[in-house]
Length: 431
Image 1 (cartoon, rainbow, N blue to C red):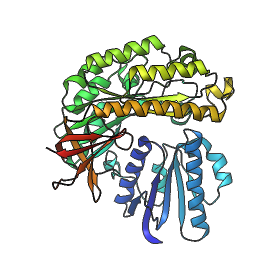
Image 2: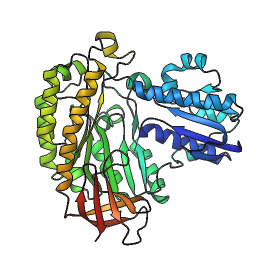
Image 3: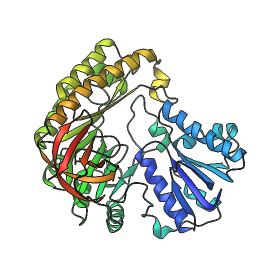
Image 4: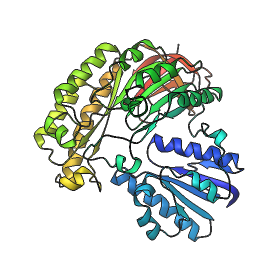
């Protein structure tokens, strides 16, 4: 047990990661040594930032809490704190069931943790973070909460109403991060496209992206978690015309069958979705679209699933993730539908969908063989440098494996020749 060391463990999405990074910067300012996601936690204090989105994420969070609770029982840990979405949602139940935890904090109450340690929150550092990512990229959270009412989603119950951050505040944070060496920014929000409606009374994501792209030192911007309904078309010229805005858009569609889209309360139809995709690809040639799809929503028939499978074959998304429906308390589904799809059927559908996507991904990557592409180096192994193109977000998309013929620097950009392709990776050498 190392005195004055705090181990911070972050579970769930990149929005949670930003919260952890803000907390860690404050703890660092208060004299603690900080380790993030250490493989060998040895601090006298542990903080677990939890996820409460779907069943698997909740189970992972609970197992992590129990693991550290046992460490505390064995006198290997002095204090254990839990924050994030799971504790926001189930604070009373968790406090009763896991008394080893010294205190649970809601998602937005982590500043109280600093006070409870007998320390003080430094307002002057409110826009600074201790990055857990490599120094050359960072996640940029532009808002909190969500105003959508999708049938399956518990996020609005956890995070509350959509709250945009003022543009000036985001700009100042980006300038601070650029000064510390960050070159690449992943814009994140529960709903990127809603940005500005609450404080500016109109969608302002296009203006925000343009303003951030004009900051000297910002070399790549990548956009995550757009909502398809009422999509702000003025964003497309910004993606097309700003050289440092990656030709990449993460837009979660969830399904394509009108039957299921209606049950999901997505406020968009199949025809509108097809028109939107066509418009995006027309306005931004070469853009790589990433989407997320769900299988097994209540009421999904074989015909609904086949329609989605045909849709994926037709559209050929460059990047695609999928997950099975998880029945969550206090959602519209929980109150109005029965979880009527057998888990084995959900898994079969998921497997079929990802088999189709693997073929599409292979075809997409084969087209890149022989091309010269700009990449950024993330890390290295004994045999390769690990890099990404503008079409690849960290941890969720493809990697480019560069043979070690030259000495390359992590965090720098290089032009490479793609020499061969795999379904989810590319091989390359420096030009």
